[in-house]
Each structure stands twice: as structure tokens, then as C-alpha cells.
Image (tube, rainbow, N blue to C red; front, side):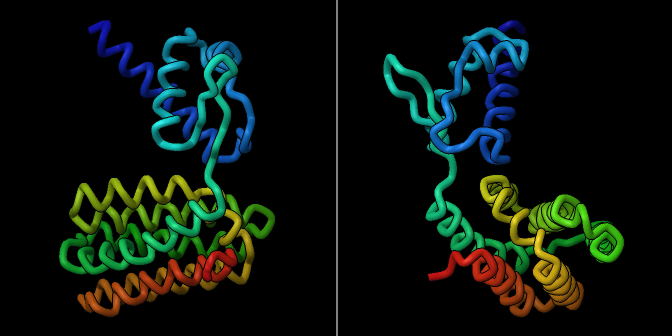
Length: 217
């Protein structure tokens, strides 16, 4: 039981630090001090140290012997690479979703689109936060609808890694509106069981985000 609790604590510290790095709380080259983080999270230095080592394996942190741990973060090339890979995998996800999506998932996606449109019209001052959140939820339901745990896991991780970039993209009103339209087109293709069209639209959707963020070559 104690070993399980230790592993669970390490996992929670890792997830918190990972989220803070991807959210931009910690910037590139920021030092991550074990004592300060431990005090903030109410844990000892041991789970913090182990979490930092795990983050180093993911490439988000670099540990310099006898100096400390520093944020590496996600570079612009990393973001571009992730979007390029996503442009293909999101298409595969949409294709598989046409085969496996449930009525409940379709209804959930419809509700998200309606809520996104409402938020876009009524809450301009906080559009980035709310529309970005709904955008993420829309994609997560599609990942689940693919009926592939592996694909869902990979795409969910990629989604987290480019969270800041996605928020920047949909924060622009014209892009947010276009993104909602693209989501609706993808959903309609899925509802019509047109796997080829759903895949094509999902691929293009990610390419459009890349273009908006000036990530295309």
C-alpha cells in the first residue's frame, strides 16, 4: 500500500509540473527548484526529484549535474512537428469514428458546437478560454469515438503539448468561427458515414490551424 501511495504521489507531482510547463506557467530556461516546488505542492523533495527525471525523459526538462533542473519546454519546431503528425492522425481518427461513434457521442458533439457558437457571439472578452476549452472537448470525444485506446492516448498527449498554441489560434475571432464551421463539417461527414470526406476534412482542419499559426513550410 505504501509503495502504491508513493507511485501515486509521484504521478500527481509529475502531472502537475507537466501541466504547468505546457500551460506556460514555467517558461523556457526557468529553474525548477525542488524545495520551492515541494513547498508549493506540500510534498517532500523525493517525489519532485523523481517527477523532474520523468520530465527530462519527455524532453520538457534538462537536468544539469550539480546545478539544477531547467525547463526546456516545447519549441516552435516541436509544435510544427506535432501538428504535422496530428494532421494525419486526426484524419485517421475521424475515419474510424465514422465506424464506431455512438448516438450519445454525436449528441455530445452537437451540443458542444451549439455552445461554442453561443460563447463566440456572447462572450467576446473570454472567447479564447471558453472556445479553446470546447475545442479540446470536441476533439477528445472524437478520440474516444475512434474506439482505439492507442490512438486516443497518442492524440490526447499531442493535444496537451500544443495547448498554448491552440488557445492562441482560436483566440482570434475569425479563426474561432472558422474552426467551429470545420468541426461541424467533420461531424456531418461522420454522421453521413462518409469516412473519406471525414478524414479529408479532419486533415485539412489541422493544416488550417498550422497556417493560422504560421507553422507551415
